[in-house]
Image (cartoon, rainbow, N blue to C red; front, side, top):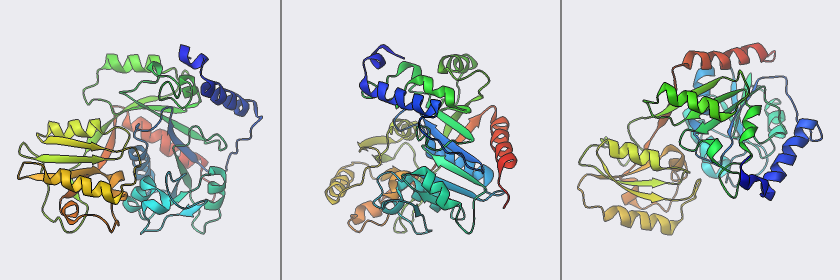
Length: 349
């Protein structure tokens, strides 16, 4: 614990809560099927969704997969199963994104994860495995495999618990992890840096620690009206529209490709207003270059699609950039941990 944690009431409240779960004073429920939790110690921005998508891709051809999250900032309540035409208002932006990418899997949301899992097990197509999104601190469920993500750019040992820092709990919470992934690493990360991170993270001895990096795909038109292919080069002038925790890496990637980038940054999971769309359209029209475009993220796109107050100039010029993650060096080992766990623990169907 850092010095600020000792005088932080929130830190003590979270620590006492964890102790209550560890001692069995608060009940944590296990289930007779594989439950994989992907979470973090910090508030937002570690790359949970692309890592969930990585695991879905790994498992979907062999197993019936379901994902469960709370559906942050949705307008529905309780258990809600996403349909193929779901939107961010119903299930939240990230579950909507996952359902559209993987229409054959079950995507559900519920503030109470225990109830969510129980409802999924009542489904006619019962899952072989459930992926819990952002559930490391949701200790009412005991996952069989907990994967903790740590942002390379925001190492936990240099951080403090809210409100003095960005940690949801003390860095020592990583000891509950069954595996750790250091995310958003530079592609040329050195062996010495990896060894330093492994030493400083404080995970239990024997806990496998992996490193991943982000791969940006080519932009994709969000609406049919912008049919021309979007190529980013030295002549591009981009209005980068984001409502995510950390847009800086995407901005750097676009600049690396030669574009001049103007960032319009909104809070994470932000629901844009009509007036904000007018402001965005005005900002875009002010860009001087002939080759100009609006770039946003997949998650933001889910909160833009379907809006009936979107100016036509935005519809005609907005693109999203899909991202994927790549496990560096020990990808086969990571994949084997996931697949072996599910194969060994899947319930009889």
